Length: 389
Image (tube, rainbow, N blue to C red; front, side, top):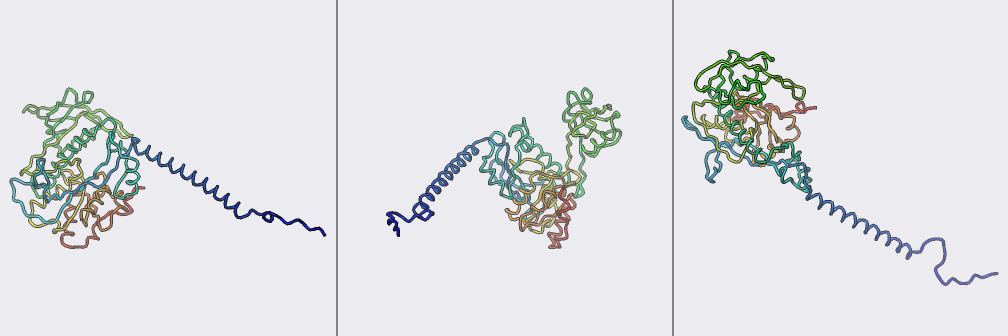
């Protein structure tokens, strides 16, 4: 028989031995480590680059909340009433009627970083929006602030008119021509400072009524009774048609401003806040200041919405941020414009009850239910039916 010589090494069985397996596994692990390290360094480098790249976005987040029944700091840092009245009896108030604001992080010159944007994206109280939506092309931050301040002043006038009219006061209004465009229909006919008394024989209640009368002319000449330098005269202007986004309008080529004549002096003090969205809350605060008792029953109620002199409540921007800001400040109730309901539904923070309102009268009715401890759940609110498809 033939006897094979004894093997001096491991038995050859056709399989790798444990030491070889360990060596290959170590090499594979080392490759994976190197690849992972390279990927990590590349990601970190990309993140660092992105962090310093200019971005076409800004962040909207909840801003400060101000109680219209309380005090604010004036330009000198002194505490003063947000609403003060001269020429009429005022009454003590309780609780809060909070106006809400939105704070913008970044601008065209100093945009937020990618890291800030990523964090804001996952925060329900914040919104990442295109910079053009907040800072239009060709408009500087200073110009935007100035425009917002003008809108704030206008909203205070509208709020005062709406509040005093709701209380039964007569509030006459004067419509004036603010400017005339060089290529407009009224160029050479109307001048800045002209007071409009009548349009086609009718006395317009406000600028909206005057614009509506011009539209109804459908291009026919419009007869205006104006006052200039203390003397009245009648002029005729033929509107020009302008089409924008598929919609045609008849225009005189003028901008209008209206001046209210108030029977009492109402001063609203709020520095460094702009825009028209505080109008409704201003009006409610004025009414509460001028009437006995507490409109809110001493509770903390927040809200937002533009307002016109006839008490119509209109839409605003940043409604979701305002909801979260109100809740963070302690409000349990929020008055929201019905025209914003598509943005409100499904985005109400826990613990906050939203009441839908379209007029100052509806807001007052809602406050009465809240003050009396009534069935708040029965008040109108935002529903799924309000969400735009």
